[in-house]
Amino acid sequence: MSGSDSRRWWVLAALVLSAIVVGVDVNVLSVALPTLATDLGASTAQLQWIVNSYTLVGAALLLPAGMLGDRYGRKRLLLGALIVFGVASAASTFAPTANALIVGRAVLGAAAAFIIPLTIAVLPVLFQGEERSRAVAIATAANIAALPIGPIVGGVILSNFWWGAIFLINVPTVAIAVLAVARLMPESRGSTVGRLDVVGFVASSAALVALVYGVIAAGENGWTDPATLSALAFGTIALVLFGAWEVRLDRRGGQPLVDLSLFRSRAFTAGSALATLIVFAMFGMSFTTPQYFQAVGGADVLGVGLRMLPMVAGLLVGAGVAQRFGGRIGTKATVATGFLILAAAFGVGATTTVASGDLFVLGWITAMGFGLGVAMPTTIDAALGALSADRAGAGTALLFSIRQVGGAFGVAILGSVLNGAYRTRVDVAGLSPEAAAAAQKSVFGGIAVAHQEGSAALLDSAVASFMSGMDLLLVVCAGIALVAAGVAVAFLPNAAATEAHEDRLEPALEGSA
Image 1 (cartoon, one colour):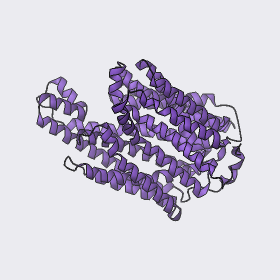
Image 2 (image 1 turned 120 degrees about the vertical axis):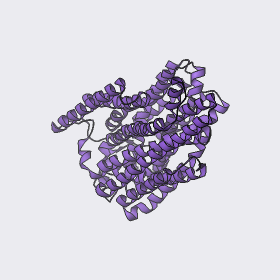
Image 3 (image 1 turned 180 degrees about the vertical axis):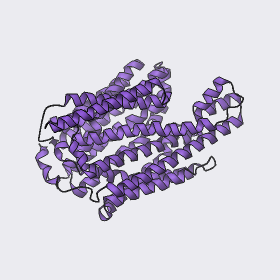
Image 4 (image 1 turned 90 degrees about the horizontal axis):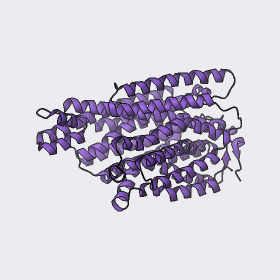
């Protein structure tokens, strides 16, 4: 496909559509859980597995997905993953039991594990230089913009249709993406094919699943829970063994699952670290602000999604600004500026009080979205610029695996900061042990108990305690953003991409006619 071929941008549109489908599917289910509990008779444990099966299976297959795309063809595997995603969506629509829906969600997670890295991996193959930066900005913005769309779509659907329609809407959208990818996208793969790294496949999958499961268990049961500690210990051991095996295979001239030479690139290493820090902080925001709008502002789930849209607007504007001016001031300055804006937005957010109101919060989350738009696409583009076409899939999958684990730990750790501050401040004096335990579990538990007891004092205490915890969490996020700005200045190369890889892209393209 020639550099002037406009079909590349139609391919990008198809890839963006695929990313939005996956992104919406991640969050759309959150609004349907109460309905599923009633209609399918799902227990609390089954509801947790409906959510977590998607995440765990996705974590297991993320790294192998990129390597298999490099080996067997990214278009071929992307088409297969989209078809599987569509079929699993249709099956989930008519799931007769909670266990059947758990299986359907697991298959959706497996398909998403291929779709996520492969949609990004083809960008350095199709686009070079400034065009690649623009394509990455569009794809990244679409990924983030999908986050608040899920609750909005879910709220609208549940208000007018049955819960299965949440999955049914994926089918026509996936069909369009399949047709576009099949018709417009050229095949691409790595030019060197070695033996499959089966040991690396198994070890990495075990490590990622155990670590993500451990973080999920920590959020549910605490960091000292035996299941949490066991999973984290097993995941850490598996990760160490995986690293040792990859080093051994690399030294013997084999083809490890992870191309260790990628970490010799400052752009890839720094870009991966910064992308993880962005996700860490972003998940802190997405974890707290919906709770604020519901617990303090009294919004329903649909209202929460609508209130998150200014963040998306800020993101789109920030991505446009970064694309327009990033080439003039350089990658280092652009990324550092984005993180400084993030730090300032989090700092302002940390001054939020019960009396602040939605308008004040919408202001700082819009600024936060702007900072994300400036920093995230440029950071990912810097990492992608270090990838040759041969290892675009594996390198992108590695980048997203690091982000996935970082995001999971971000939710758990920042959630612990919020919950710890809330529990130590909420006043449960005079309540029975059962009521006190329920009130201390979360701000929503405190509000529910306050209404049951008719206690205005407990209601005020629960809301004020939540605000204290949220402000503390945002201070931590501001600190993370400042550290990330320093990392960008110290380690990120000023050029987003080297020209060394661009002359190696054409051999990886096949069937571009």
